[in-house]
Image (cartoon, rainbow, N blue to C red):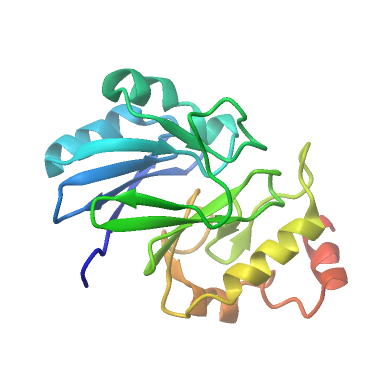
Length: 206
């Protein structure tokens, strides 16, 4: 499909994190998402694919996702994009609805607060990078400083409404498989199957 982007999932670090390289095959340009503890692995993947990194994005501000930012920024000189509630000093504010161009494709920003105030998911139109909002058969913690279980419930409800064939690329390998789909999560994720906010909070915070 014209403008479609490829998503490369890169396992990194001791916390089962995933870093991502999102690239446009037509233009050989790329975005890095959450380099985590593996910036060198991300840079090596970009070199192997012969793509040029144009921007670095964080799904949220936690260190296990942003630890590799400095290396990526120093090696590439690209701008850093984060939601201002998690990093007000970033070069670009990832506000809800923003379309971040990557070659002929775009990453649409979905503000999904709950795990952190500035958590975002990034939607290519076919794939969704979910950070710590949604995992395969699990969801992000809501008991940390700045977390909000009610906000997380509403964010997950929004994600569950996306097309069922949307690929899910989470921030950690916490589930039975490294990737999933929205349809699979609707059917198999107990947190998405909660019928109302109260039952979600009981399950998530219990």
